[in-house]
Image (cartoon, rainbow, N blue to C red):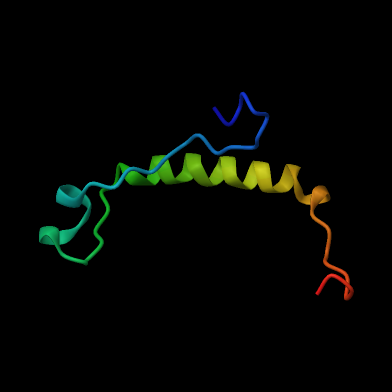
Length: 65
């Protein structure tokens, strides 16, 4: 949908599973090694988009603050 609207989107996702990525269903985060590839793909897309769109960001002027 975002691509159809010509929005910049990061399509890669990191899906976390409560059973396999958290130790005993607790708050202790223990991601599996399979998450590294998904995380790398997502961050690569994020960096590519942020680099491509860097020139569109403008620092706010003192009047806008």
